[in-house]
Image 1 (tube, rainbow, N blue to C red):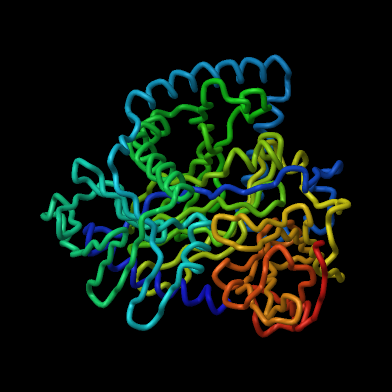
Image 2 (image 1 turned 45 degrees about the vertical axis):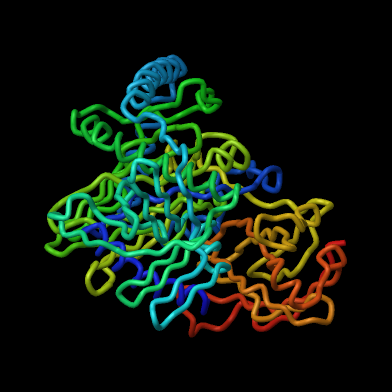
Length: 513
């Protein structure tokens, strides 16, 4: 938790730097990071509506849920006739193929020939410092930090998911080509494979990205450019009065899924904001849900998600948009196809997110609550759960939480970790839990993983714990010889730190051999 606070504090400074450079403060929608799921989870045979624990979560949702549920149920009933479904799917497929072709023509492939791709490894704003471990956690959470210098002297400068995908560079600075928009020049220096920025009291160090992160950043940048070029088309489609702006990538395995005929529904509507789900889209990498965010106040508001879950499985989909007073914007949340096809196995029947809306200038909360939607109606919502397997080692369980470690997930060849494994966590309570390891031992040597994980009520999550190769080397620990691991666990209410802990400094020891 301490590390997360440090990251958030530094993000504010970095956002200021990006704003100086670009002359704006608007962030592109953030992509979801890839998540390994496979057969770790099962879909419950009973619907979520029949689960008493899930019902408690439903009661904690926004007041607008009833309207959203009614709309969704009506949509489900209207499309229940088999012939109607077939007709809807055929029409959706045909229109989506046309849309996909048009999108392909409008957004040509990015040319990375001779591009120099850098990965952020160090940040310092004069008060807080982030090392590569913290930065990689943010990368993995869908908040990438990278710099790409293209051969044509255009530039992508993205920090913590915030920034412009099409700036410019010369031999000494990064800059916005249209300086009339209020942008400025940010100087940099290059030495061998290292690029450094020291400006306005903020230090950033980049290093040439390795093969793995080069591909990650290429994919992330390509998606940004594609989303940016196709955004106006989506808005026009919504404005034209079409029933739904749903598209499916041609040849997609997801075309065989049952999909809702009309997903449009109002999720939140009060005196300050209105959030409307407008449709969905399949692409090569993601299932994307589309939203319209309306700001009814006179202040600029920031709309963001503190977390998301699909079928009760914690996911990496995220939303971050700044909306000027009295206006609205289109926004998206992406879930990886790996998650949808591997763990969910069908078009989602239940999506849960925690929506946080606050004033952009002073961070005063305007709205903070769970928001959920059911594409086929709440009575059809299914829930993912974890059924322990032979390779799962019980780390800890009580009436509130269950934690298992997967022996088969142990790796000593991770892109960053010298030793890592998966933890599968089930939250049995009706509150969001923070699970953390206050301290740890590998054998008889103290070596903290600096790990914490937040999980929604009545949900299950898959997370990775590990130690970097550098830390293991410093402690003279051979990853191949690791057997016994000891953790001091804390589990507490993530919304009320003053409440009594669900697990209080519990020492657990387990072996993954």
